[in-house]
Image 1: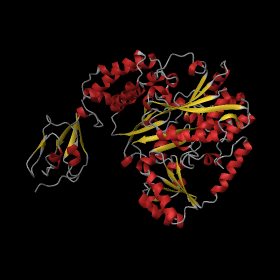
Image 2 (image 1 turned 180 degrees about the vertical axis):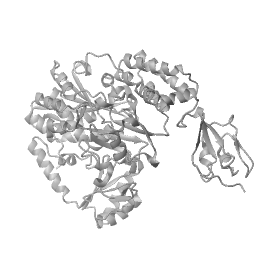
Image 3 (image 1 turned 60 degrees about the vertical axis):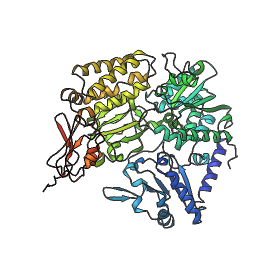
Image 4 (image 1 turned 120 degrees about the vertical axis):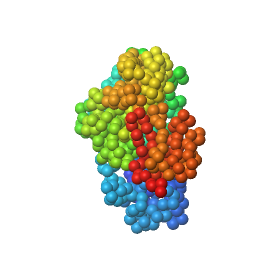
Length: 635
């Protein structure tokens, strides 16, 4: 079947039918996530399944499928058993025998591996709140197919939209449909995709280029990686449709070197598509020629900006240039070029297959369709999430994410990566779309969503993201190169207790100037974390400066360690682990910490037995015990 050329839409449907018939020969499918779960031993789990199923002579009726991200990263490694739809988390190779006996032989769930919510075991994937509250559209195939087998993708409908566009629609009709759907770029800026394609289509010249921006440099973001690793053919299909619309014969996938599995899967998918005739000359017999080449970037964050990415593709240093001319007019090697990110291309087949009216019925006026978020940080259910535009932060963090660990209190969410902003608790019920988040000082960005609780210092968060942006600045323009460095120096002073009150006003002025005067989007949005934390958490800046205290007990220079004489039993646990011998005291007598010698490493805090909890911290006027245990009598 692998040698069959797909030279018409009819042939595509035939391949889908043949694959579906072949799949019916299997009684069960064991789907094993191989994206993030790989790091926690998923490959060993897959090997164990194959070995033990073969030993039990079940390998002819049970398929073991290595998939992309199934979504619930918090429970990795994750395994899904079809047709029962049992979702198992924390699976190890040692669990395989029990899964085979209990589920594959007898159709019952393994209770110890299923999810539990509100004390109730929920074995089926569609019962879990994490999945029930989502709307999977772009991710519908992720976790359900083997991304290295093109037939799996075709059986799920992949390339049908490309066949429809190339064989039944004109390029202008494709652009009109995407424009009517109001698909906005998922890379961060949110520019209307159809309008962008129209500009490139109308640009003079017969040589045009299409680029998929798969650089994804935001800390905490893994949406594009999951799509490339889990459903690469959907991305390729979106690129085919876009290339047909703008009139490009050549395309590039620009992906960072830190994504080796994504690079591998995209490469395999492209080879398979060429072998099948889905890339190359006269695709579907339509007369349209198009091929794609993978280019690997060195990991510069600035290369997420269009003109810097193009410079990198041309073999130059990745630095942005002034616009106009825009890439749609003069891009790769001076030719009209269109750039969209991975998720944007992955949305396109949905629009062509289902129509603009269907697509635009999802979401809000400020954003149509669904949006994928990488949910990370202080939240129980970390993972890959897809929801309709306009969903609230509360829905994502609490209904899908399961809330804050240990019943903690939500403080803020960093949305949009280093270029985004911190969204505080008061906006938990705000519908998230491009316009709404802009109004509160953040940006949608590519979809990174990092949840923070009361243990997070917002000044330190601003400093962390500014450190990243400052180190990633290409240095071409003075506002970004010098301005971000000066802002970082002020934040360092605030976190280290060296700042004065006037530093807050200076920091705010600098942030506004850097945002207005920088050349590219990186510098223009670099101040967002600073501006939003100043806007919503100014009191924390004031506490650091005026009271010399960090309310979250994060900024080490403002913290001192102490031993409570009423709780200390003189066990010596703290003294034994102190790396600088700053703790003194006789056995069974109260110990003390020499704060001149103390390096604030916190080793004593972790070593003090929980039943005593004698070691505590101070920051300015604040005191914090890790556990409020009753002191043990010394008698």
